[in-house]
Length: 120
Image (cartoon, rainbow, N blue to C red; front, side, top):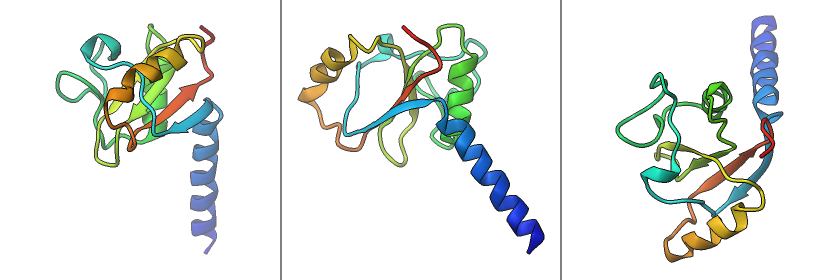
């Protein structure tokens, strides 16, 4: 029982640590479309295919990758349960217009995580 409580405490601490970098979570929206909008780590960490990060990474792992990148992406997109992760960068002033541009496609399964680790 003691080991289980220690494990539970560790998991809760990890979730809190990743959540401290999230400024806002929006459901059903995306920003940017295509390869020119996505950032990838220079060392290829977590990358899968030409675009995006491995869908099996956790949110905490994606945040760690984003925070380590020179470009400092401040937007993380997950386009569905089995979809890859995408890293993007927009100012808070640019974001509403970029979201509006995506109204032509179904973004209902997308979740946007706006990070607060960088101020643009």
